[in-house]
Each structure stands twice: as C-alpha cells, then as structure tokens.
Image (cartoon, rainbow, N blue to C red):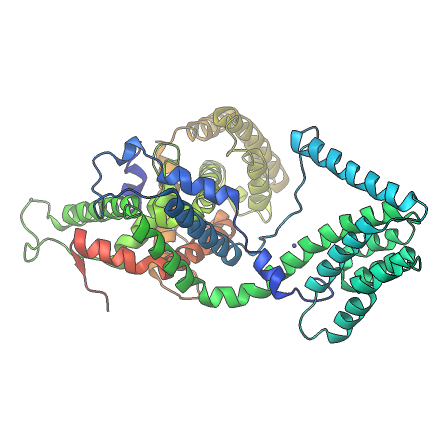
Length: 512
C-alpha cells in the first residue's frame, strides 16, 4: 500500500503576576488579516475547479455574507491554532524601519507629545491632554484585574478619580508627578516578571512628558503579556470545546459556501480508488481467475481516511489545492513532509554505509550516532530551494568514507579498500534520484510504519519499526507522534463529513 502511495499523482497538478481579565481574553481572539486573505484566496475561482460538481447549486453572495463567512473562518482558524500549537503567542507589532506606517506614526506621536509639553509649560499649566492620558492609563490598569482584585481596583479608582483630578487642576492643586509615581508603582505590581526591568527604569525618568511616553510604551508590552497569559489560561477550556466549535463554524461556512468540500471529496475519492485498485489486484490469483466469492472488495471508512492522510505526506503543494478540512494545518503537513524526506535520505545513507562497510563498523558503539549527526548536518538545508542534493550527497560520500576508514583503523580491522569506497560513494550519489530503489524502500517502510501507527488507534505503545529504520527510530517516532496527533484531532472534528462523503461515493463497510 505504501509503495503505491509513493507513485500516486506524481505528475499532478511565551507567566504574569496577575491573571488576565475577561476583556484581555477576548482581545486575544481577534481576527487576523492573514487568515482573511487565505479565505479570500481559497474562494477565488481556480482552473482546478473546472469539471468538479458542486455539492449544491451555486448562488450569488453579497459582500456582507462573504465578509461574515471570512470572519467565521478566521475565528475558527485562530481557535484551532491556539489548541494545536502549544507555542502560539501574540507578539508586539514592529513596523519596518523606514516604512510609511512607521514615519506617519512617529510624526503623529511627536506632534501629540509636543502639544502636551507646550500645555504643561504654560503658566499656569494646562492639564487637558494629561488628564486624558491618565484616564487611558486608568482603564488599561483596570483591564489587567480580575473581579476578585477588589483592593487594587479600589486603589486605582480612588487615586485616579478623573473628576477629582480635574477639580485639583482647576484650583492649581494638581501634583502630576505624584500621580505618575502611583501609576509606575501599580505597574510594578501588575506586570509580568519579564517587565520588572522596564518598570524599574521608569522610576529614573524625572521629566513628565518623557515619563508618560515611556509609561505608554511599557503598557503596550504589558497588554501583549496579558493577552498571552489569557491564551494560556483558556487553552485547557478551549481544548474541551474546540471540536464542537470548529465543526459548528465549518458548518456555517458550508451553508454559505456549499462548494467548501469539493477538494475534500476529490481527496477521499482518490484515496478510496487507490485502495480499491490495490485490493482488486491482490485479490486475483496468479492465473487471473476470481478469488473468493467474486464480490468487489469493501473498504472501511477508517482505512480510506488513514490512507488519505498518508497521501498528504506526498502532496504536491505547488500544483494541487489542499483539501479544505485540513487547510489550516497545511504548514504542519508540509513541515512533516520535509522532515520525512530528510529522514528517508538519512536512513538510506546509513543503510548503504552499514551494508557496504564491515560489520565491525555498524556494531561499533557510538559510530552510528556519530555518523548520523554528521549526515544530518549536511542535510539540514534540504528544504531550501537553493539546496543542491547532488552536491550535498557528494560531500556526504566523502565524509562517510573518511569516518568509516577512521573507525576501521581504531578497531584494528582491515582498511577500507578503494573499490569499496568507490562503490559506497556511488550508492550514496545515486540517492539523489527519487526513483533510487534504496531510497524508495526507505520511504515505503516509513509510510508503512506511519500507516500501522494510525491503524493502531489510541494505543500508547508505538509499533515495531520496520527493518533498516533502526538508526533513525528516535527521529521517526517523534515525527509519527506529531502526525498521529494532528490526524486524530482532524478526525474528531471532520469525521462526520468524511463518513458522509465515503458512504455516498464508494463501497465502505459499516463502522462498529
């Protein structure tokens, strides 16, 4: 099955000292422009859709409906990213140096702070702008609190009472420096440990305008910290509800865009057809007569889905559109695909090396790990467009021969002959071809291992690694765990849609 998978469609087109408020949690889940752009791209006409039947007749949609649908997809994608990506964090926006946005921001900010400086330099001083800034700071500090933080809330509300501050300003009794001192002290209580140094530096600023400017700069960083703390706080709760949430959001998208399962249908039908072809081929005896009862072989929905997921690891991302239900995880599948390609090359190099050299080399303690580390370094950039595999394999051949000769010398074995060196270098160089038999064997065995792991369900123990994959077992198991987790989550969300498609399109056995 795995070997057939290799051949199919080769030519196809970042903890804070206080918890975040509910408002901070909502702010952490705002829409992203990138997801919106991806949705617009996926809904745009494509020549690859020609000839594909729609799941229901097409209809005209308004701009409002399209934007609402895009927003739903954005929210679903963001929730999915928070659940799936444990390292998901919100980062402060950094405008590019010399960009128009950065220049406009600098000009506007300079004008505002110059105006504040002029007002405070008047005799008597005018505090209109300063009071507005205090009001904004007050709201920001309050947004960092939970309902249970009554004492801190009362302190902020009483000290930063805007009506009282206005009266003091009108009567010439306002001490703006005292207010700033209170604000900095409160920031020191509420900030994350990573911001202690920034808050400490605020105490060294004596002039009011630069102090207020620095306060707002640190508050912006604290907002990001609180948003990330909110995300880490809601992640356990979101994981419990994310399956239903994603399925609900996708259903809303499907109702507005009925063709949102076209590529999924094509993907599953191809997988089922490939499996049926294999089963029919294996069912026929050597003489060509009918096997068994002669009935067409039946497939289970689980086997078709597992095979379909394996096809994603051999996907042509440049020529073929990715199935809609796994689109949010396309970068992850691409990363897994690149890691497996690198592992296949690494395993093939190690296999031909141990086969060609003396048994004393392969059994030498530490040699396999040392050789693996060397080859991994030389294959580290295999995912880059500028990477030249032939040149890299030439370097690997030279390095491997040196390591083998060194190891044989240390073991007191016969030296590595010139003829064997030539054969080994040639075998390693031949791995540059995707059709190289040894490379294809490694790829096939890797896919067989992943297929077996998927079929094992939720068993904690990993299946036995096929022969020849022992040297890369650790790396392969790490990739397998990531792949199966990704697949199982996707199944939980979209399995009802997959079952419906398969029940309509192909002959599948009823699942227990």
